[in-house]
Length: 116
Image (cartoon, rainbow, N blue to C red; front, top):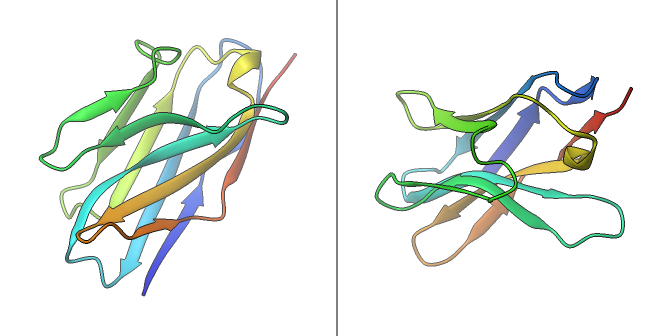
């Protein structure tokens, strides 16, 4: 069993910054990837940023140059540094982790609201 716990969401004005964290615990020895999706009301879920198997990173075009994904040395915590936030970044951000064999685990999500 794997648990993912997110933190760091909240409200910020346009142009501001937030950092999200996601800690994975449990049986994570076969984890192959970790990252963040987001979903805004009435919109499709979007892959924001992720570490893929092999350690490369992927970013949605809409966040390139503003968001940075990173992880700790142990590999069980992933961060999403979000700078120059825009109202269109408002969404629920969910952490996910992928495992050998195709299993995917999800966190409960954290709300990010960007407004003036």
